[in-house]
Image 1 (cartoon, rainbow, N blue to C red):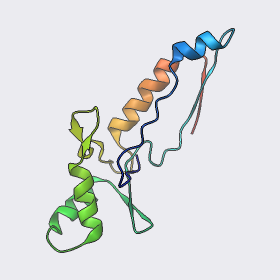
Image 2: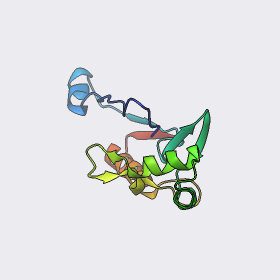
Image 3: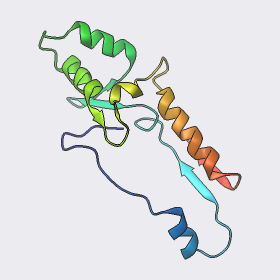
Length: 122
């Protein structure tokens, strides 16, 4: 997820039922995954990416009130509500290795639901 100042982009994919009705015969599912920003939360800070992980959040908390733009941005993201999730972005903090276990779990569910006639490209 890349956060934008204007808020999250909303793009609804076509429903699987609409796609299957439009296409004859069996359908294969292709899942393309760009790990950066899909399995973690990316924060842009003056053209650079800040890792949204526990270590950086703790460091940002320690710098509160010290006029540090990067730390302020990390704290801001951590407290921002995730639309439709009844949680804040802190829920998606990356573990060591810079992957969010919550987001990895969601991708695993999607792959499982895609079934045996699917291909995954990382």
